[in-house]
Length: 393
Image (cartoon, one colour):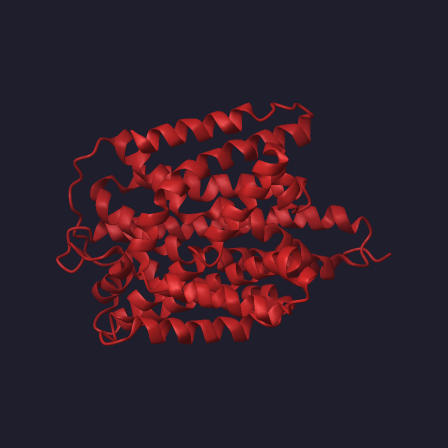
């Protein structure tokens, strides 16, 4: 057996997997929600940022740790709430990540951003073009994580990071906020749910572990090394997410009083901010950046969803992977034509009920694995009940 003998060799899978996780997660809601949050809270951005980071960064890190304990097996992880409820949650989460929310939301946000520079762009034609790009990229499913980590992840960091850094060096036009400090923190906390990052890491972990296996196939204690590297990559990738979120929240808050941002749709905030920060050409750069970010996320979401549906439903019936992929993209294009805001409005009640339950399930699963203390299903169902009652009040 060969042992890893150099830090460089360790750094390769660590960085590649961290960038892959960042690229997979950082897309639609991860751009829209922190920007909208920063604009809405203005001078109280720090409190909002703390709340947002708790649910959009810390909770996904804990989710990565939990999935490492379960070897990336989301079926076993979710069925700790019961076999049938676990199956139902897999279906709901997959639908949210896949053609009913995640993929069409990515397409719709890309369209909204590019409308900034192409006002006559057709949503239908753009959706079809995006579907072709996603199809061509995901038809070789084994290549997705490598493509994400080596190329699209770093590109996204450079494009968005440069905009944020520049945004800290221009005059601020910060609007006052009428909320209290606690109300602002709570607002940021619940806005973090919309990123769906916890759901993302639950289902992306198996994809990341599959990629890590090629680095450790001949390494002593390879399984243990894979799990350790998944956790380390998850922490590093989440740290990159947190820095990006904080940057977006603060830059948007600095310009919350700017005329260009007041009353503008959240989906076009990045383009407006780029125009303020970078000048006339900034909006075009931001639009391209959003398109890259959303495309990488859509590729990852499509890969995970199609892989699951094909293995569990289509392959046993003799259908080819390409058929499953095509059906998925047709459904995604249909829903994308509702637009980002309508998609979010339709699904927000479901997300606000399910997400807190998944957070509780994550903690109880970790407690069970590490300390063999089985808290049962009551905490999970109690949280679902509380969240449901809160939604219908």
